[in-house]
Structure formats: C-alpha cells, structure tokens
Image (cartoon, rainbow, N blue to C red; front, side, top):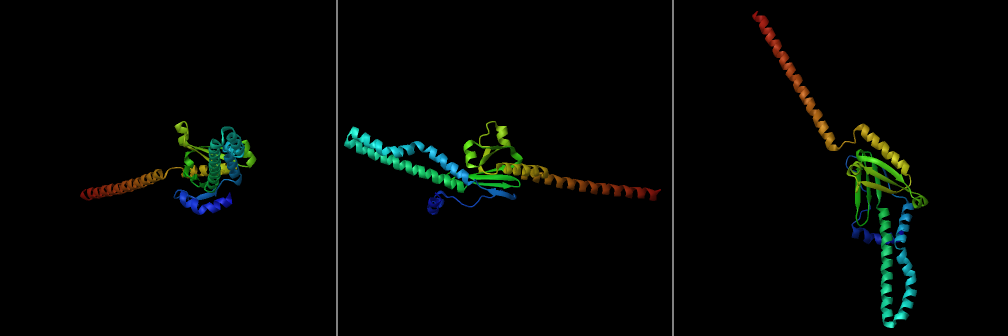
Length: 249
C-alpha cells in the first residue's frame, strides 16, 4: 500500500488539494508535542475496511461459479448478460475496496495531533479535512478507552469533552478523539498539567478578556494619577490661602 501511495501521490495530492505539511497552532501558542497515530492503528483501520467489504469480497470469489451455473440454467443469451453484470460488479467492488484502503492510508498520513501550551489541535480527514482546536480552559473531561481489538493492535484512544459539550446536552460536535495513541495515559497527564498551568498563569482566559483587563488596569492607573495631581493642586491652593491670611493678619 505504501508503494501504491507513492505512485499515486503526484496525482492524488493535487487532485484532492491536500497538503502534507503539519498544521500549526494558533498564533501565540508554543508547541509542546506533536505526534500521529501508531502503525498499529493503520493496520486496525485496514481490518475495518476488509470487514466492511467482506460480503462483497466473498461475492468476488464465488462470482465465477455462480454465473456459470446460473447461465447454464437460463440459456446462453441471457447467461452472457449475467456474466457481464457479474464482471462489472466484481470490477466495481475491487476498485471501491482499493479506494477505501487508499483513503485510510492517506488519512493515516495526514492525521496530526498537536499539543500546545494553551490549546491542542487535531487535524484529520481526506475528502473532508477538519482541524479542531480545543482550549484548555474549555476542557471538562479526558477519557482513555481501549477495546479488545485496540488492545490486540496495541493502542488506545483519548476522548476529550469541552465545556460547550457539557452545557449543550447531547455534546454533538464537541467531543474530539485522538485515535491510535500508544501512550494515552502519558498524553492525558501532559494535557492535565498544561491545563493546570494555564489556569494558574491566567492563560485560560481569552485574548479579548486579557486585553480588557489590561485596558481597565491602565485606566485605573490614569485615574489614580489624576487623583494624585488633583490632591496636590488642592493642597497647594490651601497652602497659598493659608499664607495669604497670615500676611493679612
């Protein structure tokens, strides 16, 4: 499959308008760790593709025998049409099966997980590319799971729920998953530590919130300076009045 991808790459990448470059974090974020799914997850994905086409693949092997017997029973003319129909179905199934495996291989190559100091970003997909950014301030839960087949291929998955999913009820579109992670517990602890550090340093606040806080702080300093200047002017005026009264006396 790797050899087939290398052959198709000069045509496939421009045709689908895909970029091999790794995505970037939002401006102002520092990259802590970047990784991709394990090779075991790719083999697991291939297995899913084989299972999806298992019935049609069985038809692929039994097709010649079925068409031969069916054609003998219904006559030569109709039997030839049945043969052509079966051949067309077999070719279509084969092409669809290969395209499915190629899509899974390309998705594996273009699936990236980026962990920054303020947020994490997940990029995946072939025909429909998606890049999801989750701020640590919005993360409510991080769950590690592993099914029997995932255990067999040696990887786990991380499901991250953000605040919008918790508030919305059904959580549609607000739960992101990191698939094919071989050190899921370590990644989870890393995200929790970064989340805690962001909260302690105030990085969990949005940029707009921080800007408003800075503007309010500057305004308070201006008010304080104006008050001190007014106090000094009033004090000086009182001193002048007091000195004038003393001279008049």
